Image (cartoon, rainbow, N blue to C red; front, side, top):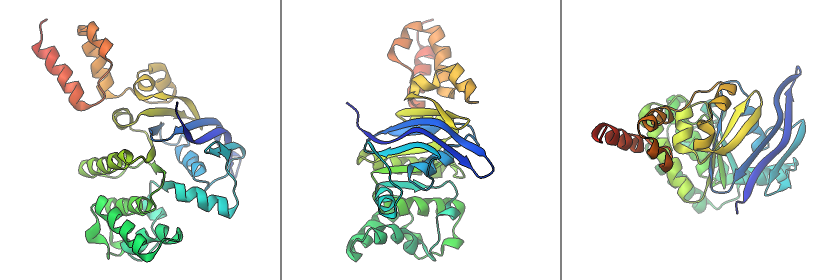
Length: 283
């Protein structure tokens, strides 16, 4: 039986000027899962994430934390944000201290931790993101990728139960993407629930347990990653394409129909194994 950590029930949100950004949106986030909110640019994903940590308040509907409606008084929001961390797509929107150490320390200090506990968390977060050597660097002197890692380190230092990331790989080079995903993998192994928004179908397919397909301010459908991304009509409606791994696997299964019973490959290595069998196996 699954346990719902965070949920959105029928939420609407309208920006000034009558711009309706979210429309009767439902979403569930299960404890311990990796959920990708997948949609084209401009579909409203960031607006949804800002609701999940209480930055925005819905015009209608409710955000539920542990099954209870979120209250928007200061005490309730502080409690929520100690459990639900949000990393924005643009790190300059999140960094405001003079240097890296001060910025990463902000969250733990606001939790009321001791100086020793705060220092321990900061050191661990900087080490996890491989930016210990930047601890005294001025934040305005950092590259985009370094700023992104500092923003993530600031959230890691708070040790949230749920970590939400808005387009976490945007602007990173391949090495930076691989390192970030390895950090998130280790974090997930400790029990942290991970949610990220993306328009990258290949990333969502290989990394997420569940996918919520998003379009025009609402979740069209939520479910197991392979099932969501094998649904061509759903993807067409959301202006998305099928992941390359799935497209190649479908072509392989046309040659070896019996292989379809084992399920689609979920990684590049699994796909390469299938290709080797196809090329080397009997015709």
